[in-house]
Length: 244
Ligand code: HEC
Image 1 (cartoon, rainbow, N blue to C red):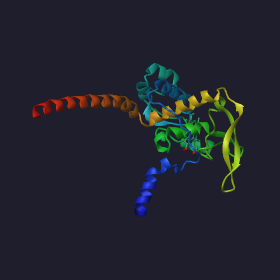
Image 2 (image 1 turned 135 degrees about the horizontal axis):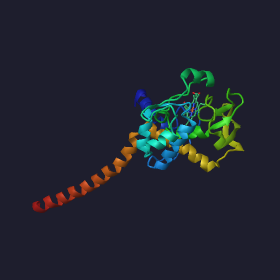
Image 3 (image 1 turned 120 degrees about the vertical axis):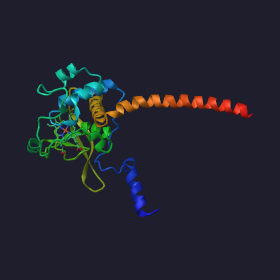
Image 4 (image 1 turned 180 degrees about the horizontal axis):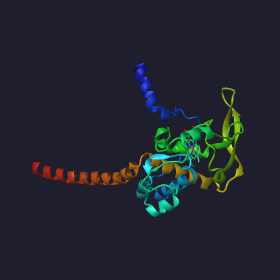
């Protein structure tokens, strides 16, 4: 095998081999796109806790209402800023300049984040669970899967506050071995996991809305193929009867 081929092969299997560029190991999110209640909760959490900083500019409020089975009135009253219209794209009040000034980094548009990141929903899930206090950071927060992230932990009230437990790595430098809860939040660990899962599922849907349809159509396609195989079999039996 030439070196080039070996390289291409390695690249193709990089995520499976854990050679991804992400910093920490990711936890499995366990998202389920057929769980509509989870997606609806995720939409609610997103609009209340994330949309203030992060736009979903490739999406309209109306599309979310349609896809997730929410009435336009409900979306208008609970999931949108009063100034927005249901047919508009989901934008945020923060300009890139403000973001840079306030956080040192403009909050990115999250329309495609779940597809852009290796691990997809697992990345978002682990990121939501990976915040810990770090006085050396400008806003006092750091993150295990995205070291040096400029985002504050916006869900700390729910999760509580985590502190890192360090361990000496092979390179002689201290590494975050695990996080421990030093101040409990409003939710217990299981309930917070579900919050992180709902948000991850919502962003997974947002990054590929067609996936909702594809999965439900897929069942019918498989059923059709099974049925058609049966018909083809009957046909074969019928033809061969004459041949014999
Ligand atoms: C107060 C503003 C603010 C809020 C609210 C906020 N974020 Fe962020 N977020 C940021 C900033 C700033 C960054 C850029 C971090 C960086 O690149 O250092 C960021 C980055 C991200 C990223 C990209 C991380 C990466 O690896 O590039 C994700 C995913 C994300 N935020 C998810 C969320 C979710 C989900 C919520 C709601 C639960 C949320 N954010 C709420 C400010 C915010």
